[in-house]
Image (cartoon, rainbow, N blue to C red; front, side, top):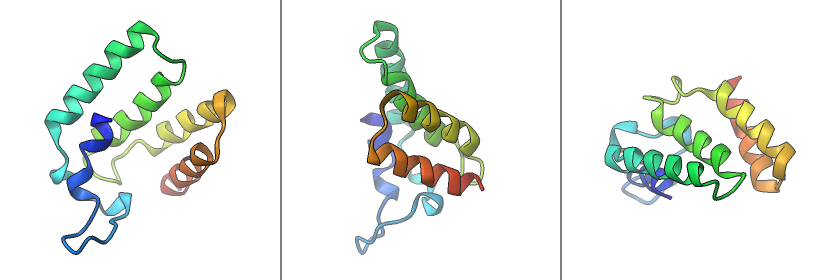
Length: 105
């Protein structure tokens, strides 16, 4: 949740309009929440809370670690979603995968 929350300030314009992922101002992302979120999920991963935790964490971390949309590791994110689809497919996972593929291309 912290990794998702870290991007909140950049997700909408002052007028409340949604801003697309590749247009987010990453300077608005909360670095402390990113650091804490990655640390927290690594701790959970070691406790084996869920088989899905590594994929969700890695996708969120790949987004958080890119300094821009162009520098985001879209190939890595696509690969992670492909594995997640094999483990536990859902419409949301498939949609997110399609977005990652489009961004990679």
